[in-house]
Length: 393
Image 1 (tube, rainbow, N blue to C red):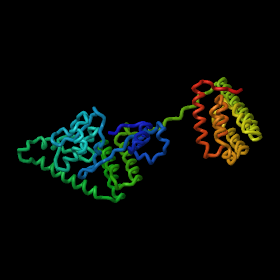
Image 2 (image 1 turned 120 degrees about the vertical axis):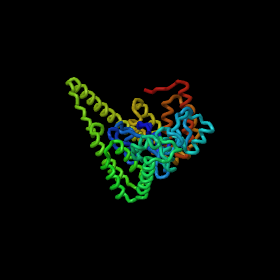
Image 3 (image 1 turned 90 degrees about the horizontal axis):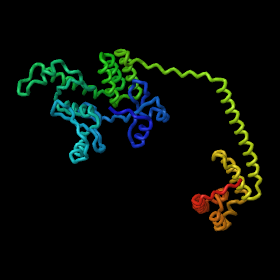
């Protein structure tokens, strides 16, 4: 069984090329393709994820696909066994030649139940029988006479019970073949609906979900309809285990004390006052930037915004850039010799002066900006290493 993944693990697996499936954590429905969900499910704890099971076909059966990449050394692996009553063998992966040979032959599984399913499919293809009583989704429950028939020695003549079991195996195989040939979605839905209604045990009902989920001729809405019928059948057979989960009641809002309400009101008023103060200050600086007479006067306005965030400074920086372009058009900047600006950058006394020069560089022609910015970054590193950060009040 594929392990349940968190949203972060699922996103990383999907980024690595894995096919991811998702479902609501409180739902008993089967997993569905992640493409049928919104992207926000990865950060929603109400959903759970898994790597989609990939199936391969052996004869008339679909079984979980074997792994194709080398697992980590020491990983517990399983291979199908068809010569004994034990249908799987486990081993520790050592990346040896024998391990790689099994991997290349498509026989290595990370889960024991997948290796057992693989073995059962190989035995069924060869028209063989197993003595295990455990039923799998594609098998009917064994007759009461089967263990006795299988236990019989091979050097004895076939008994009446063994003949019955062989006949039943061939009848089941013919039934599977007829179902495999059927491709009409409407008829398939009718067939699966009848099978769901005929179920009398939870195990057989659960097994049916693997059958129609793996069928390649059903559309998504057909599978969802059958899943819903399966859930209803499970609730009918075992109401305690499969009763619908009631939604969690919304938490009641705690009564806030008068003191807490006053505190929240004071914080809100302080925030509003701070915003108003910022807007007033910004309006004054924008007006000064629009009326600046020289580039130095425009650049000097940044000294009043040291405590602002980048988002708060952006309107002023945009206004300074606009005024610099008006005072120093790109054509004039191209005519000016670059060494004059470079000399100012290389000899900037502190980071404040360097910030002003950087703003001036932003107003230059795009063709010469990279050269200036390399010099700005180099001088900034030098000033930071010196620890001499000039602050202009």
